[in-house]
Image 1 (cartoon, rainbow over the protein chains, first blue to last red):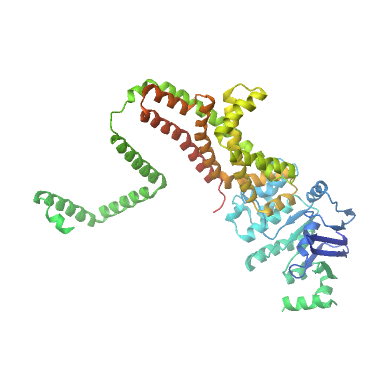
Image 2: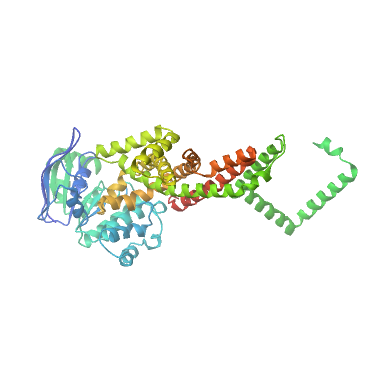
Length: 242
Length: 291
């Protein structure tokens, strides 16, 4: 994917969360957004995922410009997948039903076809024996993996992941990160917001450091992590990578 | 306590002691001891079970009420009331029919008005709000009279059963609306986000994600409101519908047996409300999805 953002501004009331943010990536498989909390990473990701409409500015994926009306955004959201920090699975449905729901109600699968389609991914990620449990009966890591699967089974063009491991303890973080790394190997494009810096470094084709609603540093991960000229960026990494 | 025991006549004391001795002796044998232990544990478990507790308390309350009835001066005249049993039955059936119709209708009204209350369009929101406030702020009695003699008259509905059911449903629906609104608002915003993210339309998101979760939350309150609705149906007598309460009142005026007329009334209403509560509890447990 190639992502181009021009002068993206998002204000909530009087707070300006994104301030004329612009970026132009190369042809990448994965883009990782890092930076301090409150810097605008998640706000940016929500706009990219078509969940929020920005106050001003344009977002272009490859040649497609993101529309600003709900009807078109809904069509756009059907072509992508989104994973949230707090999984946001549907608590009244079993894991399997969570996976089937978008297939049946959004993508026109029959129930039987949908069940058949989720079978293999459930087995591959060792979630099969838990498929009939509801989210409250699963661990955080299992829930997040189901959430990633829910986004994946519709075969999206690309995936947006908003701090997918921030709500997990270290042990479960590993199983989720492994799964995301698997995405990269399978060639699925994704944009990831994360605080797991070492992981960001490993999977990112390009890294964008977001702070104060702007892109403070951007480029291949080695450039951003080691050779950034921005003092805000270098001091942030000194803090978190210590 | 020991002093009391010594006053027991010797023969009986011997019998008691013998029985006690027998029990303690046999209890010492492992097999019997085990059996005694298991049966006592079982009895304890049964006594701690919820349905058994309900049975015990219900029986106790009934016994107390029956005892209190025996204290009422004068004779009971059940035979006089028995003559009019058909009136009780027909009234009960009318109440059952009215309540069932109003029940279904009021849930539908409640849902629609709840959506009005949560609407972004201020005109729709105001319509819902004013409806709820007017209905909740005025007596059902007045609504029935106005509904039948003014509104129904104006639009040309003459069937008092239809009008009664509609007014009752509209009345209960206003309360339902507030209950539903509370339930819908209690579903976290992240659920709507999640529904939008997978590409559901607003209506799909409501139907497949929000509503099923809200229903579980509001079930107890809705059940309470439906029980109220059944009892409120007694007011339909003011527009001359021969429902259960009106018929019981008539039996009273024919027989002059007040208590004998009204006790069956209470039992008849319980026969409607208890199954409703039981169903609600069953639904609640089958809808629950938390550990």
